[in-house]
Length: 243
Image 1 (cartoon, rainbow, N blue to C red):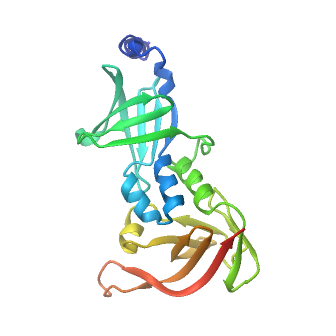
Image 2: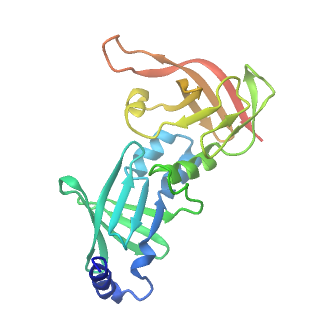
Image 3: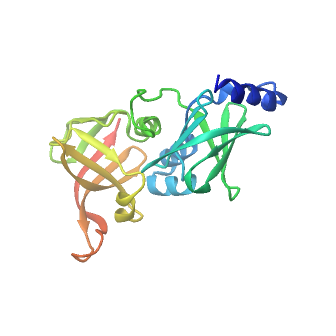
């Protein structure tokens, strides 16, 4: 019964928009604009900076819960009906106004900045961390397909990056992760970076992707010993081409 009143109120307040019901907001929504820009332009860092800061929303009207991920951390908030849209409220007074525009979710922050999200076509498992659905779609679009090592150790081998973070064909590592935000982005500066590991032991690499060509460089720390690492491209480790 505690949930009945909010839902009834939402139905009344949002009833003016006959094409959308409150439950239409439910589910996982991802920032497809950031993915499209990364694939088209090549620079992941630039695409994320220009189309961030939020990359995934998860909404549940019945429980009045709203959560989002910025690629580094997640925030959990509360949903409430507000005129003909929803308001997501978070600790510290942060609010976001959420509305539907056709099949897209429109989020507007307190400064008036707008972001558009689409429903995840293949959301991650229910128990996966928030943000996993965006990562899955990004990995598939940005690194998906069949690659071949044309330069470096293992030359001639076929390489595949899965949308769940596993990699096959590269000598050594069997897991990878693209840097989206947080300390790895700060350390990498304007560079795109990739974490490669095996048995939970790994290292960062600088990557440069140009269409169907992917260069992977060793990451060199140019910072002083007591400063935060400042990673730059060192020796080129591999060159991959996608068929």
